[in-house]
Length: 176
Length: 176
Image (tube, rainbow over all chains, first blue to last red; front, side, top):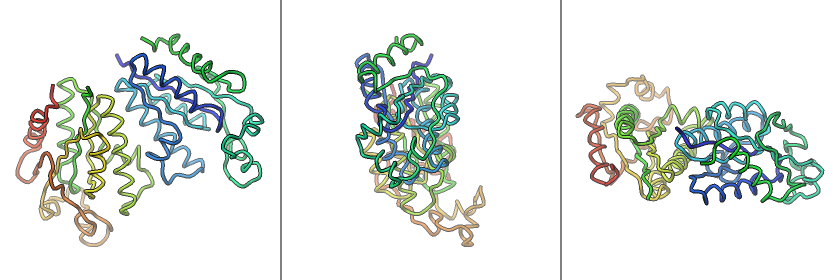
């Protein structure tokens, strides 16, 4: 029996994917799990140099992360992906690819809140047209229809969001 | 203590990297190891679509395989890479990256033998100039200076080569 699974965080830039994924990682490590986090920084540096923001390049990027999640999951590691991953079909492809051991976490946050918060200054630039193909502004984001967990950084703390993820892992039988 | 390590096959096209890596994989699996093989087909499909054969693209490809080997190795999996990987510096970078748990297997075979054998018909095309940047013909191959194992498909059977690899794993203390 495999003990690996994939936790896939999806959502707009700044919605809390990396922050919460790191808390979930720490919690799982404290419980003795092997865990790897594939977030934007890790992926850009190690898997996706040279890819841009066209639909094709985004799909390639997300499939590549899915491939690594598959390798880790089938070798008893918890793979945590934190990527905007705007297209539902590719996320679902990855869900199938890892054999269903896939927990989708939708980091939901209204774009008005993200644009107001604008930690990296990207939303302002995108709204002014200085950055093109910015998800949620001039590039589509397809929200999950049946995510296992919804976290909302405008209504809960990162710790509360992480607890929701851990609670769902218990419910789904992934916690030993 | 980690039980993972990386076996890195390097050598010219047709020198036996994939064939022997698959035998080593089978032997390790039979002994209960978790094993993943990253050979040319797997890598092209899942990690390196869009990359070409310039030095820069080759380096990116080999570093990307190294990243995945690192993830697997530190999670107690045996990662087996089988890639031409012509540049010594990048192979050594990967050796450092996986924290020294790295067994380099040099698939050594004279180019005359490979061109004569020419299983995929690629050497004839390269020698005629119909394929450019073909390693060993018009693109460099830097042989390892101190590989842990040398296998020679013009002098031994694939089974004999695989046995040499397994024997070295014993000697290095990787077999439990």
